[in-house]
Image (cartoon, rainbow, N blue to C red; front, side, top):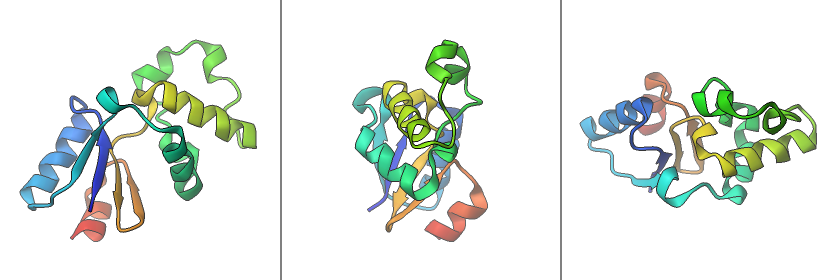
Length: 119
């Protein structure tokens, strides 16, 4: 089963969902706005792809955070913990979408990568 994590009104999420629908791919949608983001799940993802890939530093939510909230995001173990806590508190800071499929993780919507992973 495919689990698709995102925010419904995000343009990238909409494009990815349309891409899946056009190919008849079924999935379970996890809405960060309604359900939130589990820190344990985020920690597991960070082990797979690294928190640097998960954290959307270019997004409006991240850029609007006070400087003290953005401090400490570095390559240290503490940086990993800070990034996970930040994403759990502000799910809009998670790069979207994130898709779990067959033990793999897709972060962001890249058609070529998705076509290889999802057929």
